[in-house]
Image 1 (cartoon, one colour):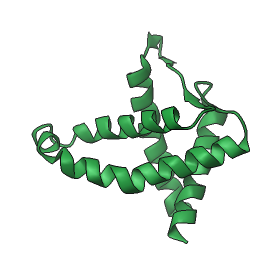
Image 2 (cartoon, helix red, strand yellow):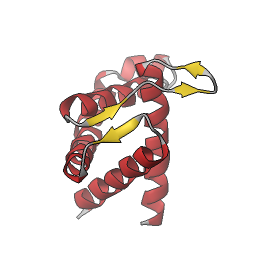
Image 3 (spheres, one colour):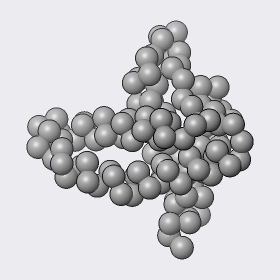
Length: 120
């Protein structure tokens, strides 16, 4: 039941981001569901393993390397799911590259997911 709730929250989060930001998109509802399943699996399985593997770097950078892990997982989800894309964005007149836009979007995803977990 917890897995279905996490997948639903991730699907709602991706749908909200695609509605708000023109740089996030998916082809159809099936792509949205597959992307939310893949992103949830990456967050629940791969993220703890990567955090343990990169613990020394994370300690030295005072936890900032967790952002890089989140960006990598989001990029991996866009790579694994055809039809789910995140393009580079322009924020306040500054053209962010792919890494910068993935970093901003991963921060927004974390914020919306935490908000939805408290609501649902």
